[in-house]
Image 1 (cartoon, rainbow, N blue to C red):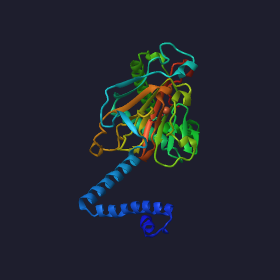
Image 2: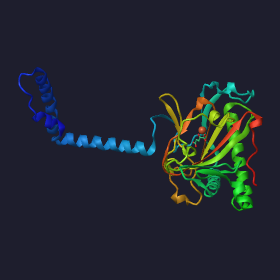
Image 3: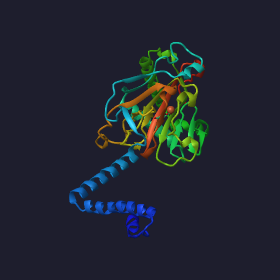
Length: 337
Ligand SMILES: O=C(O)CCC(=O)C(=O)O
Ligand SMILES: [Fe+2]
């Protein structure tokens, strides 16, 4: 070891600087021997090994489960949130857009509810996501399917599902799938309106509205880089209120992948949670899987800067449904072609 080699070297006599060097190195070199002596004490060795084990386990846990210092969990995977709302001051982002009184956010914030979407609805909408996304898929870790425009990730690009499959799309999706989207959208719209004290009819579904499927495959294009912090109003333009319906379970279907509101020194996380795929029997379901689908919603300005942690294992499904106050940015519900 390097300290022992230095201790064996004698400095020439009469050289003050060398002596000072020598004195200090002798003092330093005593340390390893003392450490060795201490290390020979069994209780200390056990304590040292124990501490090492705990540290390794902590590092491993943090690398599998999270990649940010987390101060607060807004919604834990195992709890049923009956409606939690946190008000935050609005950013000025809305001032640079046309204002629609009674809709454009004056009250800003973020909410989570587990009592709006039933387990059955979450399971059914997840199977729509699965069958749609199974027709394509990005080469990187993040794939999307936009039921409104038909955009589907394939390889490093997107195709228009409706154009690509033509009439055959009717063998893939059913009227029922689109009815389900509409029902879920309506429920989310009412939830947002109530939480922010606005009329549901002032909200207009806006684009893009899409399913996302994320796994741990390395990103191939910028479209796969879902983990960057962003502001939805900046990224998507028309968004005033964003909602996310989670279709898979944190730590059961995937690790990492928590949603995070970014705040100075105190990120707030939402742990995605939904029912499992209907093909699994109830005996195979984990403890949390019988719980209903989780919806998170928030005003889309920079008061709600957010990101998604990298997914470390498994597959994460979600659907983004957003609303604009500007009727010109409104779209119809996705329709059966
Ligand atoms: O999937 C999520 O949890 C968030 C997705 C997101 O931030 C977005 O679609 O803009
Ligand atoms: Fe976002």
